[in-house]
Image 1 (cartoon, helix red, strand yellow):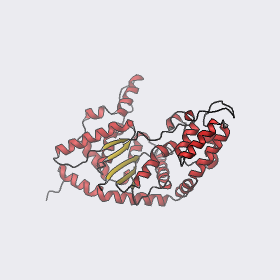
Image 2 (cartoon, helix red, strand yellow; image 1 turned 90 degrees about the vertical axis):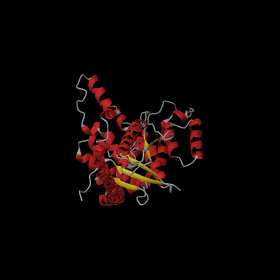
Image 3 (cartoon, one colour; image 1 turned 180 degrees about the vertical axis):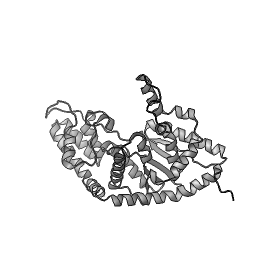
Image 4 (cartoon, helix red, strand yellow; image 1 turned 30 degrees about the vertical axis):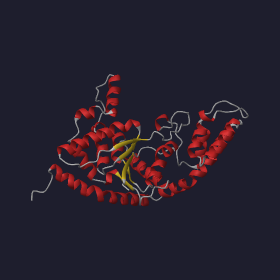
Length: 337
């Protein structure tokens, strides 16, 4: 049985919410348990400093997000879980790839074009506020992927272009330095990944300010659930489950189809919104109670989190250190004797 390498970057900004868990974290952890997949998960802290210049925020988010993944059951003996900045070979490879990346290719990157378009619309210089971090972001992403020769990279549709850029840069490197140094990665877009609605019915997103945090305290968690927008139908009036955020969230966490069917029947029978919200809170709270307690324990023990990340970095560098040595030799950065 051949092993497939998958790699996922986790940007340490903000606090994970229910949508992150259902759409990305839960399926990633489930996949990491497969025997035919070798999983790499890294905290992309170099990427974080492109958009955040608040060192305390970057540091705290790194700790919090590491704690979330560990609390939700990521097995660090099976998966390789590391902090990007603990792998010095990544920025070294990034420079090598920068020397391969065509400027014209970088000019077409979505994030850079969006920044330029916004500047032009406001009558500013097109490159106002554009750093080299933002401009060359796709090259660092390519280095993350190619460092471990990942076969598959799960991404959102907006990131597919970056995987294509990584393939272009890798192919050029392979051609110029005459060898199959890099595997050409494939973008995996989760067409069936669950997308949860937020408090206001739009997609749950930090940019909309409509998220339900994953591990906030129990009382605060209940308040978030109670804020979910519903219509004005009274108790006793039948309700459409398929257009209801409460039902969608419940379905994403339900343990069986029979539970979902029973909940749908409540809607048809005219259950009141207050009761439906309270039941959703109780169901989710029970589901998340154990992981929340583990998260709180980990947050209070940063030394344990640090040890887990160090363990992952050591494992990752068993691959990255000898690989960068081979790449150095390939490009001519070698001893004179």
